Image (cartoon, rainbow, N blue to C red; front, side, top):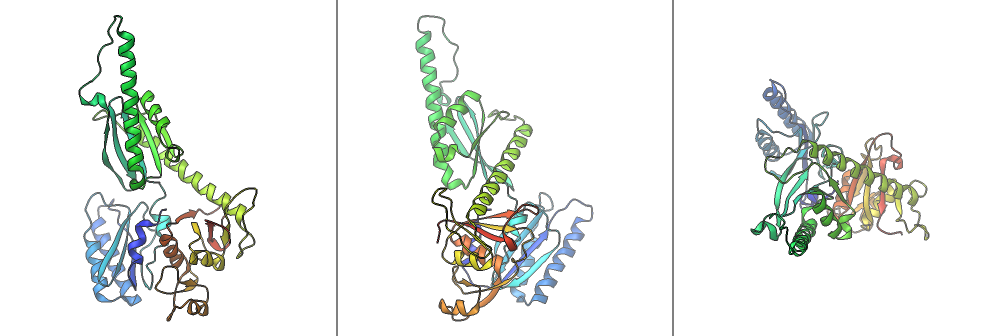
Length: 382
């Protein structure tokens, strides 16, 4: 999970109301159940000490829920009588959770928001491409890339005279120009799209030509799918399954790669081990003291969080700055924090990781992850 969308939560002081709630409406009594859920949220927040104005803001947002098309769940974060972030969830929370704490309780998002990577899809033919951005919550059109043929040239029958070769060569050049246009538009949109995976579908010859023209950094995360078409009304069922499979493979490979780097780089729990000169691998941190130290110096590239992390709920000491985090109160004071406050380790580390443009990967149960459930792959060795 990329953490950039969480930054608005860390630009203002708490305390914070953090709510995770099931919003499915698949039963006849869905409206009644939703009212009961909302009452449970209000009760939990009041019991935790939340101020009435922030509680009212949360309840007003939860009441503004569509009757149809609701996501499986929502995460709502509010402070100072204002809802700052409302996140649709790909999975339903198993229980209602509403907390009041100095930091927003964002850690459950790693398991509930969905790990399908944002995906840019190009539907390609010989005249251009339609571009679409998909994520776990939907899809949207993000424009077109049109070649010269789309501007009135069309497809003509090939003449059977001595100019046939010249015509074929001209058409070939036109196709190549269209591929250049599509590849250029994809490269232009890629940084701002937030996509992690590119899918090329449609005309087989043209999509291969586009693939070959992409910058290497994009080509390395590009797959081709057979069953897409640019034609209006074309069925996308088979393509949807292919894209879902490609996203699953990408997420699985990304996690495995991070775990491989972590296992190579780690030393004993709670310690750093420098990277091997031969492998060039990055260092790793394991356990709260080591990960806190790495987060404070903005070293974390990937934060690893196990589903059953026993260390996640342990307290650390924080200040108002995103990199002001320490294992002991005295350490925080030595950093210049006048009034250190306690916060959950997972939330404090996610705050630091988001500020450093890191990512968080959830390690499922059964996979060998960091001891205590918290670890990191680092950008450089100490």
